[in-house]
Length: 322
Image (cartoon, rainbow, N blue to C red; front, top):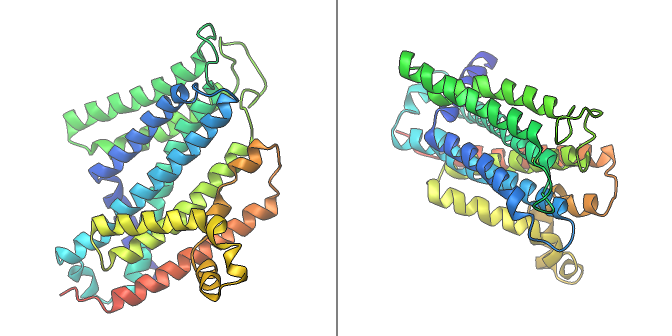
């Protein structure tokens, strides 16, 4: 069974990263990370704090859209096109099929999230220019843009000469190049002066905050896959947006009312609480997040994802695919 599970996961991973929407969302996210550096300059307080909030919000939204679009592509379209029958008709259970789809989808989302996080890392390294006289962070510009340009150029030439898939090559070459570029920027100041490793980062807590955002993406991917077993692309996206908005506001709206209303208490206990994954306010206040909190949030996201997949399995078991 494990062989079939990993085969479905590997096929789903390759299928996902080859979708045009995958590259579009990743490219748009990287572009927004660049634009965030300029947008964050219009505050009267700490611009770098707003840059961190914009960056993490961009990561969350890109994970939301990727989860919704890619989940419907790997499941809903297979059901509508009847291609799922080629797998289900073989000795592969629907539970194994759905679990393999989720593993492949989550692997592709993790890769996209890591690449987008590198763009966020470059933006945080560069920081916001407080005045027009402030120098640009030349190592970030050279290493960051250089790695992206080199990988896209190589992928374009390889696609033209050999017909190899463009996005797959970009990810295979660009991910290690961007990683090395991000490490390289940690040793230089704005005008190529040497510095201690990670000295230029505004806060090391951004790594933990980004990890918690990915925990939210893990849940969104499971919800999107479960919903896509019954609904199409637009409705899957709307459901995911609705669950995310409710999860981000549940503490503010229902925490006090739940003390006196049984309906509010039921809703408060059953709506996924996404606000636990958003710790930017605590980081901005200078609070240090304990490791136990990250472990608890990771476990919470796994349980939510498991619950969503169980619901999705029940829906998929009753779905007519023939």
